[in-house]
Length: 247
Image 1 (cartoon, one colour):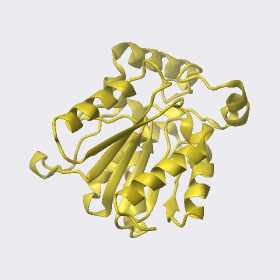
Image 2: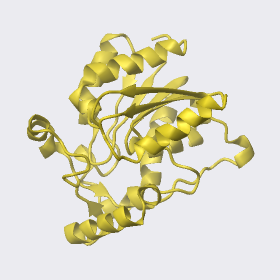
Image 3: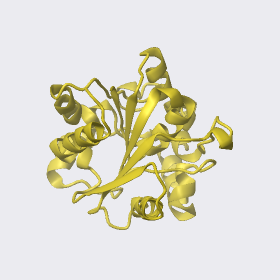
């Protein structure tokens, strides 16, 4: 089963570097692409990049690499992307992991989820940065510890605004909008985040007996993908094997 790791906002393939290496050592076939307009692909003008661009990046990777039985893993903003990619290529996706990630409803943008006050702050920051095309990573969203700030801070790049403002719109009729098995992981140390609300929703689905959802937690900060790649890789591998996936 191929594993496709999808990074969060302002990051890139570098975000998954250590976790991806650990998963490959365990025999998994791992892909961790950088999406258009960020990191080593930040030469693409941000005004040309939207959420649909990133969804096309991941859907296209699965299609052109001819991947089947894929486990999609999205961190943070990556939850928006894996939702759209699985919607476009449902026959290629066997499972999805939302790691402290956004879980949009059809027609929602990230800014819709974040709320009008946060969205307005982001718009103002983007206008001040480059006339509204891209958003620098807010220093407090979420904060990095001193060691991580020194190690990773210089690698973050501005995020194209269209990835935040464009809603995810399903390409499938509602009657056909089924999903593979999904697992939500909440990072409990990121207090007050929107991700706690998604976790509440998932737990409610499970409590009601609705099939298709699993849930677990990390006693970790939101930056766990980079800060603790061993924990991250171990849980992803555990989920894959628990779902009957072979390497």
